[in-house]
Image (cartoon, rainbow, N blue to C red):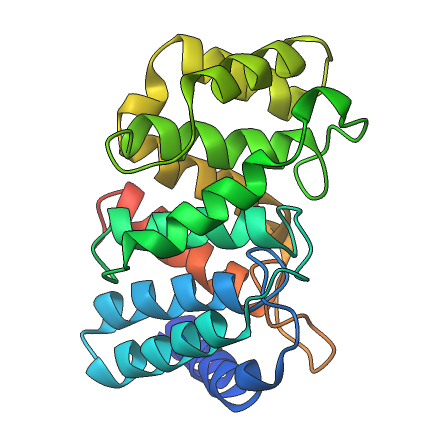
Length: 230
């Protein structure tokens, strides 16, 4: 009982910390910024049944829309690729309704990058990040996306040329039809959160994002749901 009470207190402290400081983040990205925190708060609102958290998530997403610009970085961790993945995730899960023009613009901006020239293969800043977004968007929202089959074919070719684990997984998941199942995007999110599973407690210097406070708590919620506890 003591352990359960302490865990509840820790979570409440984390939530207060996020509410207090999230709006001050300059980073808009999925892994290190506001986009990931939005995903956490929409899930937390559902988990708790508290509309206040949903309203806070709405406020954050509106801030995000107003702050995105053509000067935003393009990568997955901090930039447009991850932001687009996050918005797509939220629409697939019916957390938000988005004018498809928003994602169309992001699709077109992302497709300006020649994936065959990308030398960084990492999830955070390289080819794998492009792969996660393009595959999930193309397969799960094919009737709504600007991403073309030609772009996907070039991306697959680039993914196949290296031995990065994420790139190989994306290629195999696409070839095996896994991205046609909307549950794959949930598995991908849990994969992104794997590095935070070792966190034991949050300290003032901890990142607010999916790579810190929000990610640690979101992982607990998703794992409980995966195991049938909620």
